Image 1: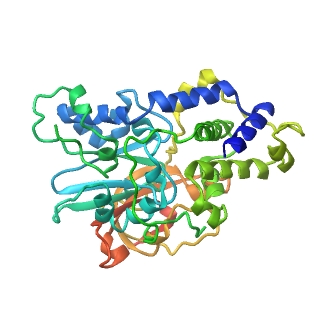
Image 2: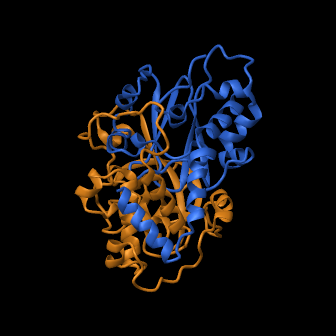
Image 3: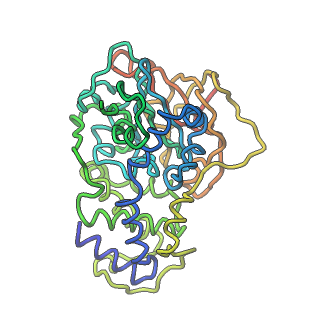
Amino acid sequence: MDLRVRTLESLLVEKGYVDPAALDRLIETYETKIGPRNGARVVAKAWVDAKFRAWLLEDASAAIASLGFTGRQGEHLIALENTPRVHNMVVCTLCSCYPWPVLGLPPVWYKSAPYRSRAVIDPRGVLREFGVTLPEDVEVRVWDSTAEVRYLVLPQRPAGTGGWSEDRLADLVTRDSMIGTGLALDP
Amino acid sequence: MNGVHDMGGLQSFGPVRPEPNEPPFHAPWEKRALALTLAMGATGSWNIDQSRAARESLPPGKYLTSSYYKIWIEGLTKLMLERGFITPAELASGRMQSPPAKVARILRAADVSIALARGSPTVRETTGAPRFKTGYNIRTSNWNPATHTRLPRYCRDKPGVIEKVHGCHVFADADAQGDPRPEWLYSVRFEARDLWGEHTTASAVYVDLWEPYLQGG
């Protein structure tokens, strides 16, 4: 694939369709600027700031934009709150839709056939493969991203973190906890 | 199109394999594949639904055995060949042999941040009203177009309840045919047992569906 993609790139550059400097800038953006640290900041703020949390659950696009995270593959965002009674998990069964501005590019497993196929029929089985077992009485809701709405899971705040700063809390927020295939880390 | 990309409910692919500390890319070419796909998309020569249609209409064997960035490159190549942006001979040699096609715009490095931050919102203003409201019972259509659709097979001809009205959004099925008309978009809740019978560990599955897919329950 390496040679094939290099050949294609040099052809597209020669034909004037793409600017090589723009390609470098795109890569740099997703390697260094846009990733799950963004989503972790959203979650940590929601854990400490009740007003922000209410806004996030009411209008996630606006609340998240207020922190500077907007744009491609996150134009229309919804936050899903995990509670002791309800666990939300997000998938795209048809392709790889994922909330880029808050989580960055999707991991390989998220785009893979095993996850895309089983998340909607056997989410508890999938969760076990992530080392997560939920109590039987928890309602498991799976969200299939079939349109241009993107979903961010707001995981439960771990016990024993009272009085923690947003920065410290953000370190407990894993990418998987914001997809719903994991939980936030215990302190 | 009823294709292998529509995977919801299949059980034969084995376990999910999470990768600890996964890097954003696994090979240098994946970075270029991402950037080329985004930069060519930014020329405005096709829309996102046409990109998805190109990927999901790859031969099933190729689709199932390719990594996702490889699928992107296959889809991108197909779109450019179909539209005459490149020729098979150029693809083989890597050298320009015919004049370039006209494109609406070329993404420059200085515009990348702004373009990414703006994205491509799909919500549209409308004077009409949605047919359904939150809490309404609906039934999805038995819907099998040979062209692009975003109604997965597992939730066709099934009862559901409107969870939320998202607004009026560009309708993927029409957009893939070059018609960017909007339709009302809903979040629909399906009880997992209505989809899968007793063989499920889900409680409910929520799917975003446009009004043309839905009938009154």
